Length: 315
Ligand code: 0GY
Image 1 (cartoon, rainbow, N blue to C red):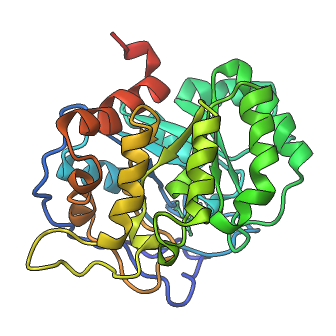
Image 2 (image 1 turned 120 degrees about the vertical axis):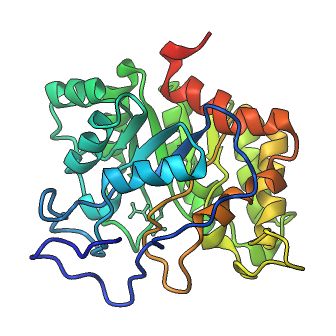
């Protein structure tokens, strides 16, 4: 059951709780699959939400995340620091540390972070930092601070995860180029850079993202969050377990064009959804529509996330 946050925290009005009973997916993910984008929230009584947060979620603990992992048939998680915890990474680090090696993390840090703190996070399983450029989620962080952080984490072998909306890519492109070309750091883009699906898969907007990936060999994309991008929504067609059909061409194009640089994740517990709460089982059933062969599926769910987050286990 989702629990309300700690006594001092009141959920943002209209906030939808993550569903308690996701269906069992019809699609069986390959052995060793990784849910490479998910979060933990609190619990607020133990790990307070950040004062500067833009929303207050319901609690979503590591035990609940691991139960979902097992229910869906996944072997591992990548837990991404959510903005409601700001640069206080304790909840995410605690979840990684409590996973028995089955979770890695992506942190949010400020320039005040010490080398010792970075080393400790590395020891707990953190392998990246996230820079968020979505204005409704965070206040602006100067790019020189982000570049300084990117330069400090590169020697640890960490990568940079970026979250932005498609309309902002033209402005952000030169910054990302500095991170991936000048520093040589892998840059992972959340949710395909959030294209506007109403514009169509052949739009100039989406082509800009595809050509950006083509130009920079160390830019990766998460082909996740159809529930955030879809206009047609979760309604299944003809009784098929196939929702969010209007997002399929976008994710499929990225998977087919860059099969070695794609990741997939549930985005559980689905922050900031106001219209509907996705069924995680149905989200898993989205996968074979975008990764249409066993080889694409193995790269997306196993080979790529293992190479990025568990390179030491590579054969
Ligand atoms: C996501 C998307 C969202 C939120 C966050 O850290 C966050 O608060 O990432 C969003 O609201 O679009 O990936 O979880």
